[in-house]
Amino acid sequence: MIALQKGDTCGAARLIATALAVTSIHLFASPWPADQETEWAVDGLVDPVKVWVPDGIEELAEGERLPTLFYYHGTGGQPTTLPPRSLAEAADWIIIGMSYQARGRYDYSPEELQQTIRLRQGITQQLNRHLPIDPARIYVGGFSKGGWVSAMQLEQDGSLAGGAILGAGSLKRAGDPAVAPFWRPKSVYVGIGESDGNLAMSLRAARDFEALGARVTFDEWLGVGHQYPSEMELLRQWCRIEYLQRRDEVDLGQDLELLAEATEWLEDSMAELNDSQSMDFERLLRLRALRTAPFFGYADGEVRGDLEDELAAMQEKPEMTEELAAEARYREILMRESQDRFVTTLILSNRGYADLAESVGDTWFGKRAAAAKERTDRTLESVPPEAIREAEKALAQ
Image (cartoon, rainbow, N blue to C red; front, top):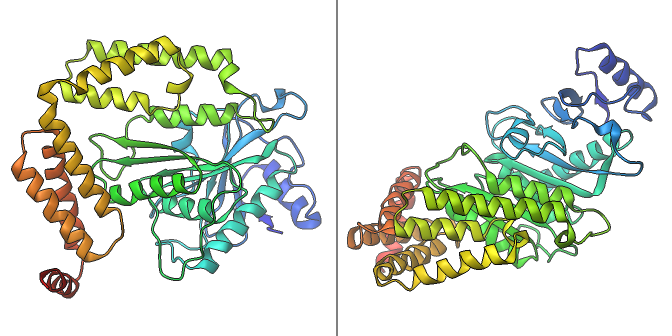
């Protein structure tokens, strides 16, 4: 059992920590404070975790349980619950701002990962004594380092309901434990900036989780690098739908409130797009993005049909031919880059982006290819020169 030690300055927290140290039975001597972060120190973690409980939790119906998100910060950060609350508007969730076994980089090993999982599971057991945590709806998520750690936990812990991987991806290493197909459905959100150095591995994560049986929402943040975007509408929708899921697997297609909310969102989004000055191909991309949003399948069928009809018509326009061909070439290169992290693969991808940018530089994806070349240039700059020479030698053979 993980012992939560005194880590809060308020008197109630000291009383709770003392009771826990003496009895190891009850975590709370009084109701957990709602609508605020409370700090707790946990044996085995270098920084206190932050616990945030939604307002109105005392008004839940008897037996009602809430989804819980364990959120892992990036390198150099501190435990926090703010990004899920502010960007994802996960106001109805219990959120735990997690810490790590050590500061700095996450030194991966199968044993270290299992310890990370055990620590989280132990915290869940402790908090479950007095918080209405739904054991069937435990999620992990995080940005950068936190996203990588969350992805690894999702692969290895079958009890998780899903997770949010932000600014990160997945990567297979020699000697890693085999990942079995999920025995229960998982829901995974993957969000990444279009110029983030982790873009290819983020795409790989989405592909890998789909292959394991997860429902995946992939969200590429246009105009963003390795940072949070100003808003994450698709993550907000993802959190909303996961919140509405219950252990009895209620049919959300019959949830009139959700259907109305999703329809209003799609109608407003289409109206906003109509009012914008988007060029044709940008409009096509934005229509596609709407179609991949979690809410799309719950919106009114007629409104969805209007979008599909417009999208089909736009793709048939003669002026789209060059743009769509450039996109196909770009995505082929990106797919190759996502296969592995070998230096030879990175060099080939970098060359491919350069050729595409030079040949169709005026197209949307020609410009994306130029940005991808710069992104892979930065990655190659971090590779030791001797490794570059060996890779180029191998490619020349």
